[in-house]
Structure formats: C-alpha cells, structure tokens
Length: 248
Image (cartoon, rainbow, N blue to C red):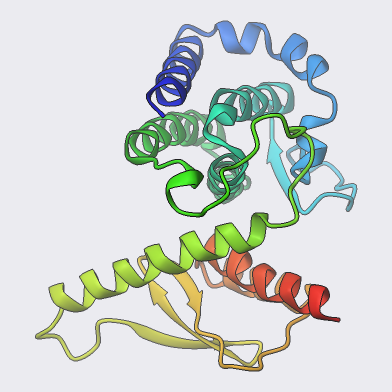
C-alpha cells in the first residue's frame, strides 16, 4: 500500500511541477500522440471552443488549448494508475466534471489551471487516505489486468464506495444541522427522488426501481442545467442499470 501511495504521490507532484513550469504545455503534442486510445477509453473528447462535437464521447470538454488539456488528462490518469482501476476511474470522472464547468467561460484558461491544480491537490489527499480493495473485499484487485479494460464489477465497487461515503456525509451533515429545519433539499429528477448534498444530487432509489441509459443521460443533462453535480448520481444509477442487465 505504501509503495503505491509513494509512486502516485511522486507522479502527481511531478505533474504539478510540470504544470507550473510550462513544460507540460511544451510536451502536450508528444504526450497526446503517445496515448491515442486513453481518452477514448474514458469516453472523453477535447475540442476547440465553439467547435463541433463528434457525439461519440460521453464527455466533451471545450477549450482553446485542446492538446494541452488532453495531455494533462493523459498524464493525470497515468499518474494515478497504481491506485487501481476503481480509484482511477472515479478520480478521472471528477476531474472531467471540473473541466466541463468552465468550458464556456471567458476566463477558461485561468480556470483550466485552477481545475488542474485542484485535481492534483484533492487527489493527493485521497491517496493519503486510500485503502486497497483487498482490505474491503475478499478478492484483491488483479495487478496484471489490462489497464485499457474496464472490469465488469467496476460499477458495483464504485456504487458501494459512493453509497457508503454519501451516508457518512449525510450523517455528518445531519449532526451539524440538527437545529435547522431544512438540512437537505429534496429533488425529484425523471421520477427518481434524491437529495442535494454539498452541490451533488444523490438519488435515493426505491426497491424495484428500473432505469435506462437514456434516462441516466437525461438526468445528467437536467442536473447540469440546474448547476448540480452528477458524478455520484451517474455511478449509483449506472450500478443499478448494470445489475439489471446482468439479471436480464
């Protein structure tokens, strides 16, 4: 565990130094050309502001510096790979959501740098608190699995982690706001009730809930329009959809 943590910490700190020195921007084209399939594996497209969208990717980031942003994502993913696929996917999705928030801003370059710096800082904090999968489940995560593949049980692991952390956050928030009449605000999106917790809409699915990929896409779009985060909602609802597909 300490070995993984040290490698990832060193990689992230190196990425931060490259970002501050400008060497990352200078090497952007080389880094991107060396990882042609990495962005595609995460369903990410990085395109010029006001440019057309291909429609093939789940996530599209608009930027005036597509090579630079793409290269940063590639380096970021490579730096946290030692922590395992679940950690890597979850952290990368959070990074992508941060990038998407500034895509139409006039200060996009400034916010790009802030999103990158925040991603490195927050991920380092998570690395220091990280526990290997083998301490949570009987079967440890395989080290020789192809990194370009997303394992079939990713969503079940991610769902459990998000669900447990969400309940811990809810308990903490309830304790802190025990004397307030409204600590959370309920929202029903696409017929699914949920609560807003620190800017994220968390679905509270009832037993027997059936969801579709199209419904999840519509929920993500509506949350974005309302200015609410959708990362945890997508993981939870995708886990339910994945379970439906396995049971079919």
